[in-house]
Image (cartoon, rainbow, N blue to C red; front, side, top):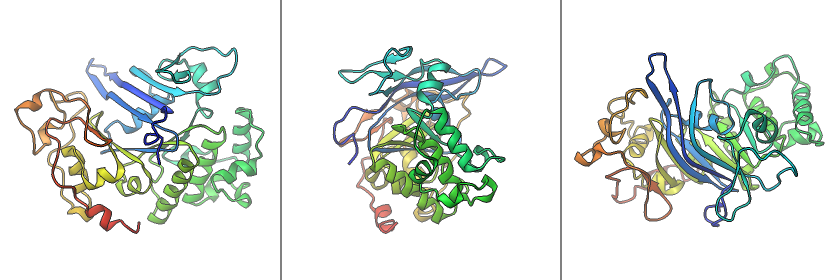
Length: 349
């Protein structure tokens, strides 16, 4: 059961997060637009959508790793139940009666480096082999990370958190399989015992058995109380591990839904189109193409490709609650009978 179901306070509260860039011709690239969502302890939220929709840009903003020139607005509050006494409170904030938190969008580089990265937030990168230092053993890299984070955990124990085998600690990255490289970067991400894990396309380049293994590992971390934000284009992987699905299109979150409800009954036309494009659902291509982020259509950004578009869609919708726990940004959400094909076809996956 997720923290959302327990009505707990969120570990992460993102509100109206926007990221844009200015090109040399002064055109604005709207990479992320007014994204809002919560994530709870013991919950995995999967960000899904086509390549270039803003998923990785959003997660990069949460750890202050955006490219130079990024213009950021909104807030992203991380709960911090154990602030260091006397520590600089720059960027601190609170919501309701919850413990003080840190707005990572407002925090400076020193705060991000000393309090956030590796400590409050762990990052599992998209390409494990290119993220590891090629000329140093896994043992050496884990030992350095533990030292920098001030942890007294042994290297063997740190590796064991990600099920990395002890007899491979003295190997170099090029000596590891894709699955073991994934475990190595996961062990590094867990070294500081962060409450929030950002997994950015962790299954890229892996075969299906390794994808399943990686998803089981993420689910295990979630079940132990961590919050996982999974960025993926792999809907089958998201189905196997996520508690909720957040769908992004052209920089906007257009639907947030509990996983079972999303695959049975997607409310946004784009969500349904994503599912219908899967081989097991007919392999129906989505008509048209994603808009350029410098030339977004007025109103609903999905309107030029949407079979439900009508006169009212010339005004941009905002996320509105649906019956149950979901929300959708659409003037004409799908209210048809739930489609249980996915659950039937993937019952044993």
